[in-house]
Image (tube, rainbow, N blue to C red):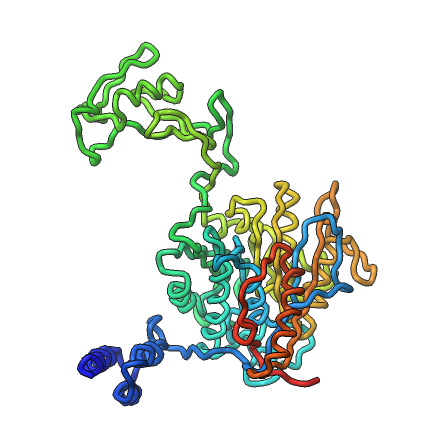
Length: 536
């Protein structure tokens, strides 16, 4: 018991160190009492549990969102599914995204690894719109038009995001990346939360984006015309973001490969890189003698050995300037350091985040105009994101066969973006779009939008202004499998029904992911629903 007493003293000492802003004196006293009564078997778990609420650096109660008498399954709606069956198949899933994510974790993971390459979400921003707009979390929404119900208490909003992001992380492939749109209200808190879930080392950047206009009436001191896109990678580095920007640049081809005109690399060491005698040599190239001297005429050194310099000269990758030599940089080739030969490399680009603050095609008014031209009515959805914005983010993943997930599907921009991008680069990307049907948002906006851009007409044969382009008016080479979430009552000791539902789940999972391979599934916990079962 001496070990237990020592551990208790240590944990109580750690509790006492926590700032009063996170744990006040009364709370610390309560925790000390709980620890004092802990046993050797559970003291570690007790300490972890009682300190969980402060480990991210800010206070919120991480309450589990699960009903233990109910499971939810995603089931295919054969009547609603539409499109060209020989085209690329996408999934539109209608239901509570927490329940859907659990189904996706069961079907889009293999050997514990996620299969989703890109996640983009535009969650509620947790702003404080007026109750007249239908966003007062204290009252029921009565407005007929759909508006995000985005007025949460901070604890509620963080808890909502935490539960979903933890599931999202399980879905990301090893090279996966997640983009999250957010504004000033919760950007800082979301960043800390994501540091915990995805790892601080996996944070890529927070991209500022021009929204197009200020949100009238929401700012006290300054007109805010931007929000952010927070980006995290699944691995320890953002392997899919590129290292050159070729947009608008002049590209040429020679016998070696393609290159940006004027894009060269220094092979003369800077003074700060130090001097070495082995790199201090004169080199003759095309009848001219080049010396490793700086701007003041002082001898320095080349970054390469003489043998490597000779190999570069033989390959023809040296570029002459007035006083020195540089190396031509190629988009598709690299000068290998081990072999001194040219090797193939992937063409990669670097993201210039300034683009998101200057391009009108990335702003909310553009998204609004796009949606209005498809739906042929104004204000069917507040601040839809523009297609070009989502296409830009998706294209940062170099795979044209990637799986793209959006579990705050809103008006359906992400699925349209995936379809358009496939046309533009011959890709085979699949989109999984998840949305609830509060105030008929899924059926009246999301489903209707995607139906129209694929079929060139509305569900009631309506015409509209939007076309993709003159030679291809609609995105007809796509098929959309529509799924609904259905809840089933399941008591913890009803093993016969559990087996019956498990068999049903296997069939539906195969429809959700044709490549699905069944693996052990704890249906009680892994498919437990957000809400308790209610009989109709």
